Image (cartoon, rainbow over all chains, first blue to last red):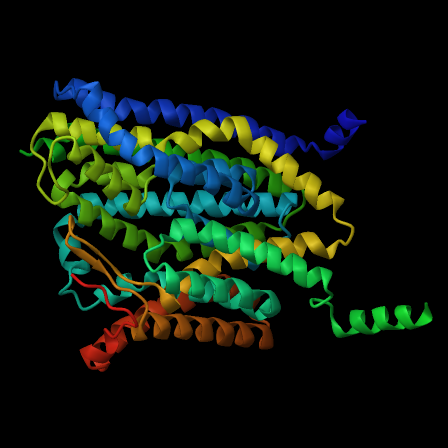
Length: 242
Length: 263
């Protein structure tokens, strides 16, 4: 019975993406480890194990815990292919995830479908390529001007300083209008948390807000607060029949 | 010639660019082929590429700016490599500072010792690769659990509501930050990240209003081709409004924050 259930849930495309994703993850780990190793060999500079370990002990408890939370929180929103690719290319919360949400909203696809898988993978891949290109071009060609462009004295500096409210304001607008009833609770909770814990990192705040938002939406759904006028009328009629 | 920005480092950077681009193209190709196979319109796939590319430009420039932030200590190439694969600014600065602690140094100094530079590269790399070690083992299981939970739901609307609530939760954290977040001052890099105040709330409201107005116009005149551009345009309008307000408003008003951070 259990086997039959699993077979029914299996999707050849998703299975293939898992296969490619596993290969790409392992390949990336090996490739990344080659970078510090080649720096050591090229410059004949070998830090001691203790020197590296002391540094690692300060970041591993925070970043490895965050990694577990990020995988659990983001993978359902991203989908299979996009999750593997996003975790390779990084900048997930500030770029890849909003980009995927925007593309899925634009294509009007439903999360969990093959169409959503396709759109999110294409969005993540495009975003990764464009980001890689912009950073590479910027570093190689624009490095002499870059400092002046983004320096405190630059007239367009505020545009970069306030990129996050601009990004999440425009991204959120569509969701807030469409799902206004379930939007209040997580926003209010985020503001209250920030009021009492102003230095909480966004990386910590995101999973908290996601859990609160899901629980609140589920509660509202169960209480019938998300029903349309027609649904409410139908439920009322059914009740009076009984 | 500084070893941090020598030819060897640029070769490493080039290899990283090739590696990431090849992987992205591979996944995109597989998704594109599957999209065609299941009958998706070519225009939908092209729109996903266009809107994602436009969407990415501004945040990518912001990431490029963070490369510059790190460059004073690590040169341009290592931050470029790190922010192209896995990295983000908060993690990279923390990892670099953690490694520098072992040598009683602070972020902000120009690292000239290749041994310290190598130690920083190791800490940045090993500290960040954990998700890639976890994903091959756990992603499929996580997705199966979520799939089972969704199929158990008695009402077909529930998975959609939960999905929307998940997105809204994520967005709320950032909106909350724009409304009530406190700024931070990083002594090591001497950088001040402003908190919530008149500027952040104005930019937030302007981008929300622009997005809603443009969506209404697009729906009213049935401008479906314009749809992929609405979100990036709204974002640029929001960013542009920050520049405009900075030059129009008196600085004490523009820079007013609910809870200013002490430097």
